[in-house]
Image (cartoon, rainbow, N blue to C red):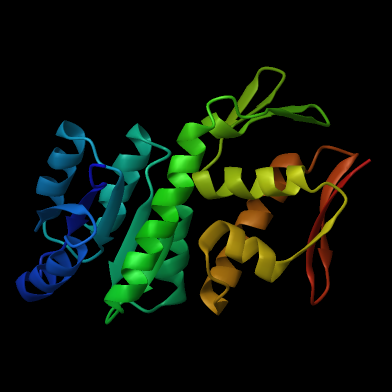
Length: 228
């Protein structure tokens, strides 16, 4: 079986060498040391996952991710950064990234994250006949991250689409925060919990005019999608 192809972007030569050397034991790694080179590679070659440093010359990681998401809503993206501010982590996740690891990171954790997101991506691509959902006046196509209502079309991020699908697969059921975080991120740390609140808030704004559909807070437990 051919190895999965990883686009790895890092301008620190020593760190790039060490990380690439470890990743190459499991994946085919294509390394770029600046943003423009990385974006050109992404546009010209197929990849299964992107690992992006944020502080890069020419284009930073956020800019690369924005351009990637314009062209591909499905490919997993993992940010690596020395920036520890929660605003940066939330910004990265809102751009459609799947995870955000803070330097210095564990190479074992990075490999585990990559494997989790590659497996999830493979399951999604294998399921070509994914079911579609109708709730209230919305029609939801999870494989296209598309939410339609009459003539309105809303494109969700991959994370928002996964969250909505999780709710719709469990209507009128309390979902614990830990379960949601493990399903979507494979981790339930504090910063991902804050990011979850951001995605919940966005979904609420989208469905706020639906009188028979709402996302309820269950204090100290989690959330419930109520469909009446």
